[in-house]
Length: 473
Image (cartoon, rainbow, N blue to C red; front, side):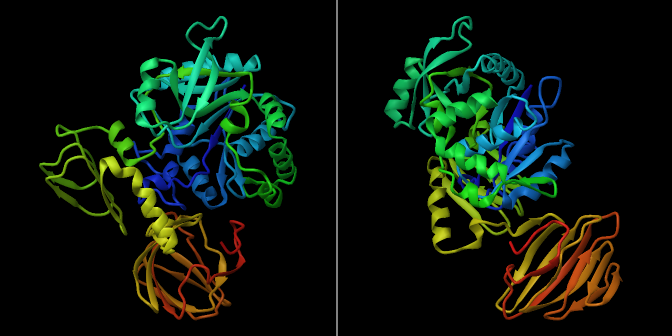
């Protein structure tokens, strides 16, 4: 049995401003109608040889991950990482979970934010990997390079594995991201493959090798796993124990040290979508070589990537540019310098700007809200509540709120009163009053919220009861 382990805990700021800390690229539909996480889950459909996946994500993304799985009708075990500790500890707790009932399945470790164009070739290569993993080998998948890429690490292959022909090779060494001249020599030699970050091995074999080379990781991960607890539909690891875990990747912790590493060449239209220029590479180009999304009008624009999300973007006389528009940010950069978006993200963090972490539209387990206008002592939001959902019973120390229903029906609790409001009706929640908003209907509830007060931050929420188990987040 193969257990897909999907790593969905990244913050994905290389594709800012679309990808942000609280809504990273794996949760976005960057190359199709479905999000990258949904595409990854659908890539390994459960069947006779494949079980439902195990997804590792962080605390902030758990409800969005759960909702996206529901949208595509997939079941999965979702495990919450208390803090990011890289891939080696994440896969360690996944292996423990997979072995909980005495099984010892083969783990197929997949990042949630990769693109694979040829699914048939990918599944054929996975089948080869499963056969070798059953024999105790630790598999990594090396992408056949299309050119001298400096943004990837490389794997140098050695001798062919006995009986496998050109399907699998022993690993001679892993190498860091090279400069252009070194990458060109790697590609021309034919001995190197791009390091994809995808792996395959038996759960027990991975833990054996990890314990041999990084026993501190196994010790801390074991404590975190033993101390796990259910949290609604999620499994929450013991935070104190996991925080003590060393941070390391599978490559450094195991694959570069083990004698049982095997690399399988993979040529299936793979991309890790690590930059805006990478999205241009894999996108559908028009006659001028442009990749255009949304409402875009261009005149004498060539070989550019333009993504308009909330309004029309008009461009004139550009070549090899990236333009990304969202409701609150516009990014403009030469395509060759798209990787430097990380400098902007670093500046935003230094300046404590919220644009680094959240979009204007913020998702919650009950629905979403979007800031429409904000000044020093007031804020206007558009709130959308899913059918049957309800917000926590809460109060605020520093603000009062007015609610106006635009669409649907609202059940509102204010103190000891319960109101039913329909379209064009409104109510007022005084400062310090306990209140709750519910959608008892079968269509989405939409309302306008006008906040007024001395402080309007999201941390001015005291929760008394919450169906989603949240505390102050």
